[in-house]
Image 1 (cartoon, helix red, strand yellow):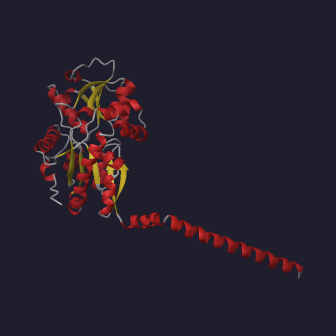
Image 2 (tube, rainbow, N blue to C red; image 1 turned 180 degrees about the vertical axis):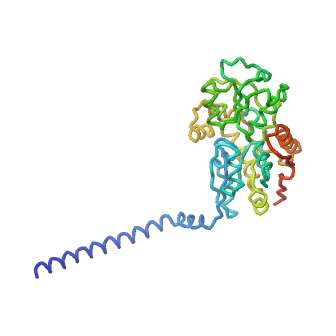
Length: 338
């Protein structure tokens, strides 16, 4: 009997303890709900938003749009939540775009042409101003190569399907050389950087931040940048079927991107800090990268831009880098008006 009474007392105490904890927990939850009511509502609101995956490369114009945040904020008002996905290069990004893993892709000038040649129905939805000072052909500091004609017979690293493809072709063309006169080695940026550092290639066609890092860290020399060779515009792209159904968002992107570019030009110090953090760059590399850019958006239907994209298509076809002719004008979408 005594043991039974002790057991009842223990169970009673446990029940009281459970009740105290439950009551305390109830008030804590109520308190949190009162303090964080807006946050809880926001989370519920997020679940109602249509998620849009946006592809970008670190340090590019889309990355600036991401860092600035205005586009994502304005997109929410239209019922969209922007989710950012980082890629190393344009061809990989466009593969994700055409397989519908992302809805926007920011690439250089050549990837959209190669994608079109492969049968995709991608469209250009925004264009940037030239970045010719950020794309270049590098040679090692002790190289005997001093002009483009010296590239004859040399091993040149580039990335097929990236903007470096067109820059390489135009550089060779300007020196009365062809692909058959050089040993063009197709490498991704990481592998190309290693090959350049270890002397396994004689030149490297690349872009920032890779070029800035090679200049600062390896004392790489600029044989030529894109000036006079390529307009070197970047593009925001999407797929035709999706773009035609979301022109409100495309117009918003164009408007907010231009505002962001102005903001970027006025906030170099902030960008240098951000790129140092996000890209793992030294201050010197980030400063060089940002300092030689004037950010801006261009008129998507500018004939000079459309004509250069057609020249890229024609030159790639001439050099048997794509197996069919491409008419790029068909890929420039009409966004209409608000």
